[in-house]
Image 1 (cartoon, rainbow, N blue to C red):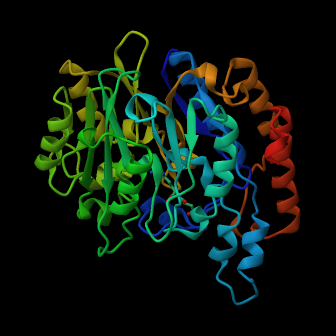
Image 2: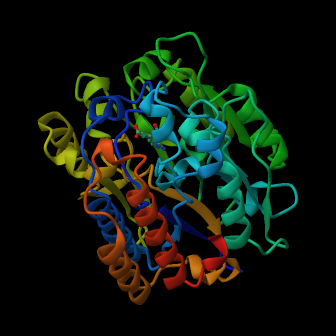
Length: 416
Ligand code: SUG
């Protein structure tokens, strides 16, 4: 059996819109009310997947969830006094950010030798809390081979769980036992701390992780207050490398020490605040990057285009490349439509280390399938959604039909 890391990107759904739903997510707040471009958004996502398929030879995807969510609309008992954000919640395409779909512990880390997945309950935000039952249904199909995968229910409320966005894994190689690092926030700041410590601990126990190879770290409250609503806005790990802003954790040195105690080979690539301020890191999403091990063994960092446009971030990146560290390439990608809602390249993917032969092949990308997906998007995804369109019957009919056309094209009508 050959275990490899597969990135499962969320295909951007046809109802993608900017409703300003996520308190503490600066991009979401500042773009709330803007027109959105679902077709362009989804095509940007497919282009990112194509690039990584070419680089890595393997790429997966997850399908948009059904929107508008009629059960949620009914439950909200909407009338003319209802704030528009409540209606918009039931229309959100937020499942595109699959880093929040689940926490994944690969087989070499777990007591029963299976890959464990716990869908994130996402209870802090109404528009995200509706996701997990449908996400679980999809994961149970994609990873339905129960000899190799275990799919759990979400952690019970009120312990907020945001999935892989607050989870990092360090390892000598993806198929070797790793050290799993859970990063939680403490409530009390100006913005919600979405990941509760107990949620992280519940996930670690359920997945049967070895306590000696599991680390729990507090996120820096000032990072949350500055807009790092998930840890993956300020840090990312791959292999032996932790790529992090200097202000990511509540006690930065203790965090490194705790990880190193469990994983002595740790290599930290830290970006100091004097090079890139916390605010600029959050604005450009430098750390919301995909840190990939290429077949050559080199690491590449897939960053948003916004990084190249920032003098301080790009200056730091050029200096880092010249210094001959473990990250050998920095590759910008255009995911601007997702970025405007606070979702960078890393938000758009869920990493699952497993044997690709054990995954339902309908969820794995190849060039022909990428062409097919693009064709359906080009033909059926709305070109533009204005905030006033949310709630219209005509738009509802068109986004429902668009999603069903994609499910049909991928032989996944059972998700309908
Ligand atoms: O949960 N934005 C998402 C962005 C998620 C990013 N994911 C990671 N960092 N892994 C969120 O805040 C905005 C929706 C709106 O405002 O319409 C939104 O949900």
